[in-house]
Amino acid sequence: MRKRKILVLSITIVAVALILDTCILQFVNDKNAQTTSNVLLDRVIAVIDKNESSESELVRSLKDDYIVRAKAISYIVDAKPEVEYDVDELQKIAGLMSVDEIHFIDDTGTIYSGSLPKYFGYSFDSGEQMAFFKQMLNNYDLTLCQDVTPNTAEAKEMMYAITWNESKTHMVQVGITPKRLLKELKRNQISNVVADMPVYKGMEIYVVDAKTKKILGATDTSWVGNTARFNHKGYRYVKRKHGDYIVAVCMSKSMNAQINIVAICIVGIYLTLASCLLVLMLSRVLKEKYEKEKYIYTSNMDELTKCLNRRAYEVDIQKLDLNKEWAYIAFDLNGLKQANDTFGHSAGDELICAAANCMKFAFESYGKIYRIGGDEFVALLTQSEIDLESILQVFDTTIHDWHGKYSNSMSVSYGVVKSSEQDFDSIHSVSKLADERMYKSKYEYYNMSGNDRRRYNV
Image (cartoon, rainbow, N blue to C red; front, side, top):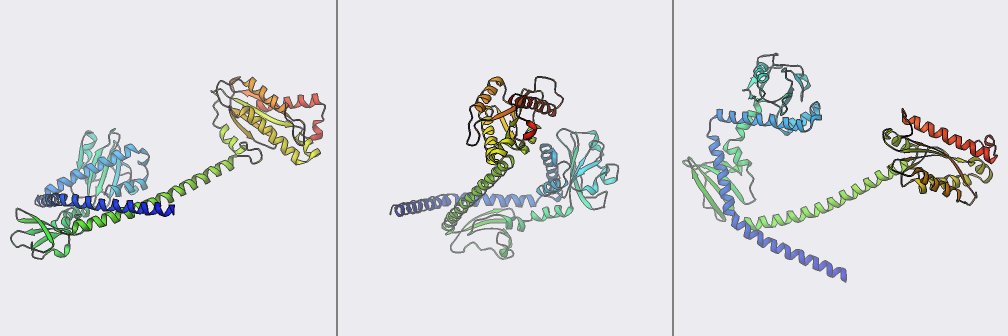
């Protein structure tokens, strides 16, 4: 019952919110409809004015645009220098910037990199088309854009724009085919520009010849060529005469209500899908993170002792710096084979785990513990300003006080080396000296205990 009440309350709150949202949207849309229409009219009129300019002005405008694209590519490459020689990335940038070719030219005028390797090696001396840019070599502040000209390599009709990069170390050249120029010209025709203008459902824009009343361009292309009428019922018109044209925006009187419903539905669907997608992505990310951490943990961890394994040891030891202060301790259990032979491998495992726990207790706060062999361990103590003698004393005491299920005592031999105690030529020299000291300690243990080391092969 409580869950049902919560569900009903949630639905009620959402319904009230949607109703209020609808009312607010209706009010705002009614207020903005006239402003929107005037903005659209201004945009169409601006296009008409632009189309009445000469072709040469458009070409000059495109030249400026292509130089801007060359500069933009220069900035992108300066920000990401690794893409300078990456043909695939440069081709992606070319597509993004709507250019066909990208070339990098050194201070001698030679192409050394770019999106098309077949042009590498061409220079300003390679032909008439390339020679046009020789003046760039004497003026680092110069930018140029060439008229449509056959290129040097293939006599293909191209337009090229070129600029020096910010640091003046090389030039960036972009190439565009004349088809793109024609496409730009065609794109600015009244019929195409008006057809591409975004409008809401229930709203249309069209441009009419003031004399013939024929529609020259419209967002609904099926209107083009028809005679314009401004008295359709159910529509509201905003129109303006501009020179030889009449520019009009017509809106359905029910447009606001339709827009509100569509907007609310879209927002609701979007929020639902976004929430589901977010939960899905989050669950996948958490799963991948868990799997990755689990893999790293298992691949670097010794299963028996939960110490780091030899793989982790080999990685970490390469990171040590002989110019910094750290300590290397090599450990080896005494009498492990005797325990295995006498009480079984369970006793041996008990000793190995006990030794590892004692090492963790004494040393883990100051560095890392690794099991690199059957009963061989290494501690790398990298924390600065540690009292090594006190730490070793804690370890000795912990080992001495240990008693287990199969064995009453445990002995561990170790060798300690500080990175600062002499001028070592390599990390290997440190580990070798620690092993030597450990084996010396092991020899002293067997000599004092009277056990025959060879008998137990330890």
